Image (cartoon, rainbow, N blue to C red; front, top):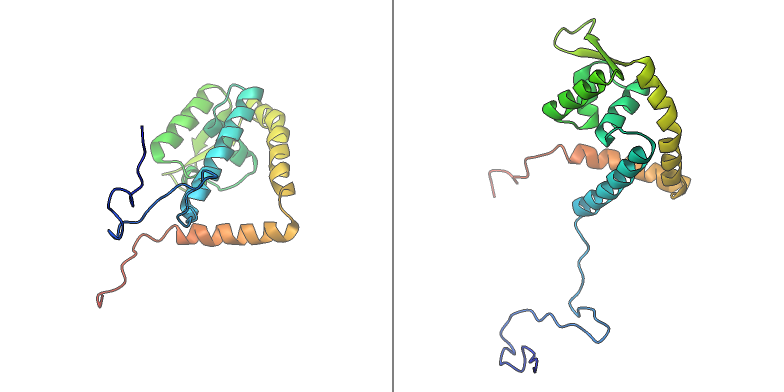
Length: 179
């Protein structure tokens, strides 16, 4: 079967962009870089897959369950709402994960001492044992990430991620009433 190019079929000068593949299998069209949000999403997927594999290899927890244990173990935010927001969980996912950890005896839930609308979350002795067992494994992974970057790169990426986080909170992209 013969393959004809757009030029052979009379489309020469049609104004339609031509997308030919060169002999080395590459397109002769200028390549555009992927959008930054897609590159970050791809990285996030890889990091999550790696995290799921490590957690599954060393426990019977899910990655979200491990993350709750880890963040509580780091004594991060005080109160369930601040913890949920820090972790980026929606309310139902957070509630489900907390209930699963509580049912397994890994998490204690009590009334927050200052805000009756929130819960105080803490690790039980069994939860602390899981943290002590898995923490070093995931710390080694974090060390691998840190070793992949020079100290200057690490400073830049932390600053850049912070700025991107703030920019990602903006949802109004209108240019104003005059346009």
